[in-house]
Length: 214
Image (cartoon, rainbow, N blue to C red):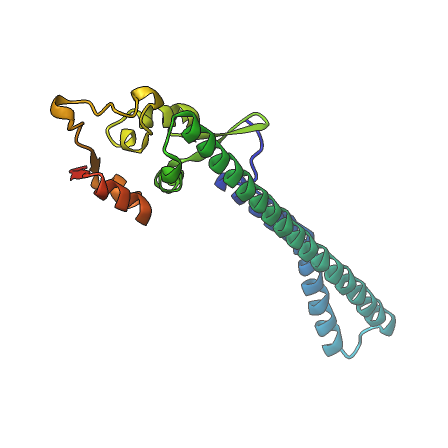
């Protein structure tokens, strides 16, 4: 499976790894610092302490505290860098998502004859259903288990989608269809209608369209 830094489990693993490394880098030094402080306090209470031993404890404590400060600084830097990397990947993922989804929808809608004036409404209707699937080093836009293009092709033929598809250009200027030239009554689901912009709703209404239950 390819490494996906935007996957929830991957993010959790990165965070836990940084936290574990931080704890490992500082835990021993914290314990040593605590031990030396205890010894030093005990030595200071002991009137018979060897001055040389007292000085040695103070020197060792100072050195330990310097190392501890360096370890904590390094851990903070590692955490900051991890956050930067995570944010960079999240930003890249958002850009990739927008490009694949937006461009993929535009291409699929054009291919399936969606009316140009309806493109914006259809994108708003369908884009929330699109996710990115990682296969190796590639990402592809899908809806459920179907590639985006295949999904749009099926949707355009559905009762909901067919209302957004432009009429074939070869019908001819005088072809109205139906008995008496009345044509076929246009219908559209409430969900599809609500997804239209103001112009689309107006055109549908002017054309005598009728809303039907979803």
